[in-house]
Length: 580
Image (cartoon, rainbow, N blue to C red; front, side):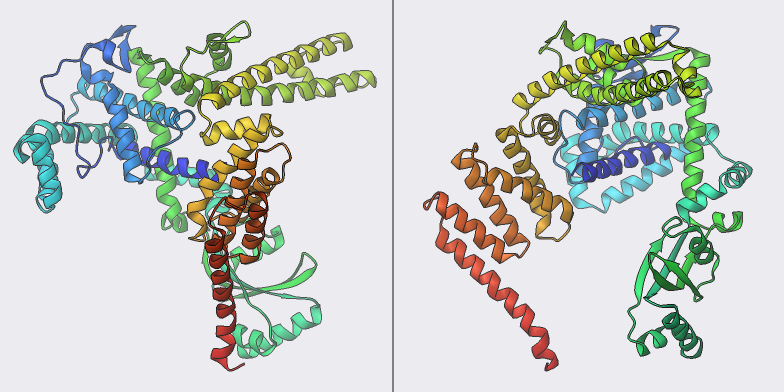
């Protein structure tokens, strides 16, 4: 489940990145720009963050990040993906910090544009506005919505749309000026990273046939040369297995080299691999053999965008340093999550000092900072675990009168056995403290956010024997998985893991009757969705033994019988149709 969520998060984050590169940090007019009065005067204290020059805040509100900028973009971004909400502790603050970072970068761009008098022409703005207005006029629902919100289309155009278009085009001009990548730069990158790019982007569509003996392979190859690949396979009763979109590295190097150098239609092999012989036919091939092939592939635009982003980021850092520009945050949660995204060193220690007075958790501190502390604790524990392992390795070398590893000596210096033992104990004590504080924070979050998927996962990892946590954890997974079961788009391993977990609760002697009944019901429900009437009936029987009045068992058994008959009909239909 976590892997799926990370992948989904990446989609949203990538959408923001694309929007920024394109100079489009303003949401679609189909969603509408924010309708606020032009005469509202904001104060610096109302901002989430702002830009300073030489340590002094810029007075123009253009360079202040206001709450509505982040909140509106966040809401509309989720809406565009038809997502109701994200986890308020682990996902929402991270995404908002990323959005804030993009907006702050945009404000630096606007500062640069003002300083260098870069702006779109009146004609450019008018053309873009006209195009959008024509689109709106052709959409009656959107037109009515704008009239309700702004009074008239002309007010929307002059007071809201036109200023935003001017900003958007200004940002685009600056990005094109400072982030442009030449053809020579792309070519140089390709030559220097050709092997890496080939491993990432080369693709072949294959068909494969496996053989138990070399004699059968030779018989097939002889027939294939006479009658063709498919005909030879059919005449020998062989199964052709397709391999679509195969990448480099799936097969051993010898096979890789042959497959990715073959022309489409070629028969390649035989190869002895995994205790069998294989022959392949290459159907299609997309290989970055040279720069010309690279230039005509999808990889080209992705690499170009990557280089533009890197060049822009380098320019941004240099410009801010030259102008002595900095970001100052008024919002503590946003600041810490922003620094987390920037991989700032020492953030764990700062947050630990904020959250704990000696060993007492300061509950008044924002819960979004507590969740960040948990993430930082994970990294800290990993680092300490590695250091302890290295100290153990150092210690073993000294005990055996051997020279410690050169890298360890370089990292930790020349230490005596006593110094190593002392250092190792200090690291173990520190790790125990980090783990203890992490547990304290997780327990607090669990008591206040028992339905958070992330909190439940952490709580279950730390308390796998707590029957209440186990029940809540697997119930949550059930709720996450359930919508996908009927569609068939689910991870079988995740489903199996969830069902096994629920079964441990259903059979636990320390679980309440209600917990056991609920667990059996979820198992019954999942079995129906997976079209497994045998298991569904078993779980019904168990529920009925526990509590005969828990549900309408007669209807449930009828549903199981209907599913059983449906499956029997499906099994018998093909044989009837073919006359077998």
